[in-house]
Image 1 (cartoon, rainbow, N blue to C red):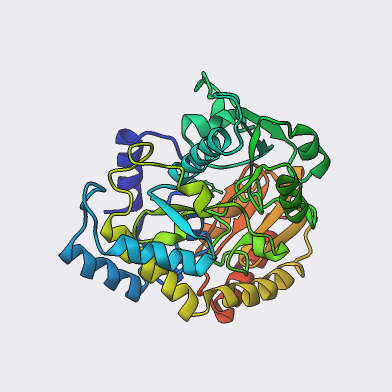
Image 2: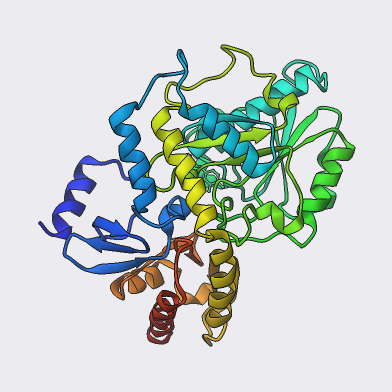
Length: 401
Ligand SMILES: *Cc1c(COP(=O)(O)O)cnc(C)c1O
């Protein structure tokens, strides 16, 4: 069967809520994937950073299959051995005292929002239903109704109202705007260390530290969404580590499941997460032993195989190399670790055609918004593979310029 067969079938029977490149992947190993026609590609997206450990990492696959043969689901009506072990290992890894497990990233963000609100009423004594959470323009935190309620992207919101109240939007990176927005009903500030979906946007240096200080001063929770930037993507374990700040509430997901399973978590101090009492929150699949066994191994391989260090080292190497490309179409190349964006000028005709041309060359990446090409290879990538990728990028820029 060829590509067209699957593309046509998907487009006929599957909802069109994505616009994927027309490459139908059938198997993968490490940084490489193969399509149904036998062509080999280098994965330069890593499933939006959910496959940071590389595809089908043998140790993670083994943890998955071993656990799958033993026990997969108990629900939280009963206990299993894997969740307490993962909870402790997550706390040991991050320095927090408690963890709350969910499945998708969106669910973990929703959980953080609920944590902020319950904390606001029980601890800060904000009047019922008046808690406010401050968020940033151009944020991306997921797709549920509450989360799109505080999105500033009309494509995510249009025709999906009415929306959840209680959110205030301030410009990303402007500390003065945050300061002005805080009032006695402010429960939390929710922010991404780097806005990946918005086009790899960096706040000014010191922003996260200043925001954290401001939150502390005003008794506001500093909540950071590290679903995409966390677990080594930016060359440190967390994006916030670049400014040495520790959020009050940390949200992780994506590569916590090692690309093999879906799992997310919210981490915080005990005085926040202990406010959830039986019945106030939950998920049937949350903390299932299969997800937990996979996550435990996913974390272990990141540390033992030095993926964070590799991300930092290769990120610096590749960014420097990319910056040698001279093209009139490039506005800016920016990145941290292995999260890199090439922003094109408006006259470049959009990032999509570059991604399509790179796909032809065997390099799989994806545009984010109109004009940014995002590069985010698995964190196990080697210099040799980056050199190969660089040649392809250089060639495509030459041809399309
Ligand atoms: C992907 C992502 C989410 C949403 O995670 P899902 O698993 O797709 O629900 C939230 N925040 C950020 C920063 C993300 O990159």
